[in-house]
Image: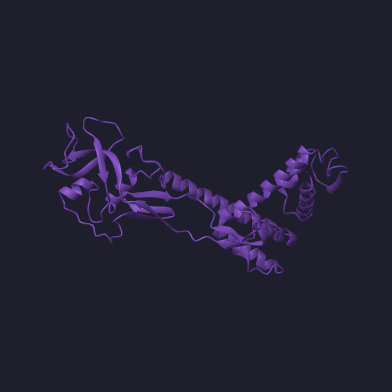
Amino acid sequence: MGKYHIFCGRKRETNALSGYLVSGRNDIIKGEPKEVSIQVGAYGIPNGTEAWGIRLIKGKRPDRIINVEDDNYSGEIEFVKWGTHKNIATPIRCRYVPGYQTIDRDYQDLRLKVDIPEDSAYAALITLSHGPNEFDEQSQGALVQMLKVHHHNEHSIYHNPEAEGWMFKEIHQEEVDREETKEIDSKFDCILLVNKASSKPESIRNLFDIVKGIETKDVNKDDVQEIFTTLKLFADQKPNVFASRVHDYKRKVSDVFSKLESYHAIDLTKDGFIAVGQNKKEPILENIPAKGRDMINWAYENFLEPEVFDGIQKIEKIAEKLK
């Protein structure tokens, strides 16, 4: 027996843009939008499900389907894939009641005479936190069993297939370890990027412009040391958010170059120069230590360099005018 892990809900950003919509539109924000925090709440799943199981007699499978009122039955169930072992398995109504080891609702009602007050926290719902949840399989055995068979569990093979819609999924230890390792790698890469950008005041300011959000709203933009300290803390505490903003920026840059190529508005024929324009192409980036398309890759990898960052901004403005 160990820990049982689930993830409730879908992963989502903890920040959003707030503002007033343009009259008559539901997709355009009027004026400058502001970034705000989203309060992540709880989920309530029904404290009731129907699952396929075998009612056991003294821990062993019987040779027939056991009625809940059988004197030898004590509420122990082995759940199996829905529809299998039809000679000994049957649909079982399940409910979790704190303090009881069985989730067999009919056994609770008919044999144990369980009475749940209407104002009980578990009368109708089992409350789960959004995101990761951990349970001890020994001390919370009945609750874990209920979650494993529940029809809102994406990985449940036991519930009635007519009940659809998942609200949580199981996370196995290997996946937990993999996610933790991925976050460590992401954190390392983010901090490394901050340290690299700190070699030039303009580079660290460029990185700030890319990842800035509600986490950096009170930073003095004229103080390079304060920017560096803030970004390093941001990268350490929220590496996934930090990394996603860098990724979004680089994806946008990639899309801009793709658009220029589709409009034949970029010239890569002169080594070391990227020239851009719809009619007359002007050199925007110069002295690039590469040739042909490798010049775009070089700019993509050195996006924080002051001359590259400024050049990309100019290229974006040119691409916006292409219709």
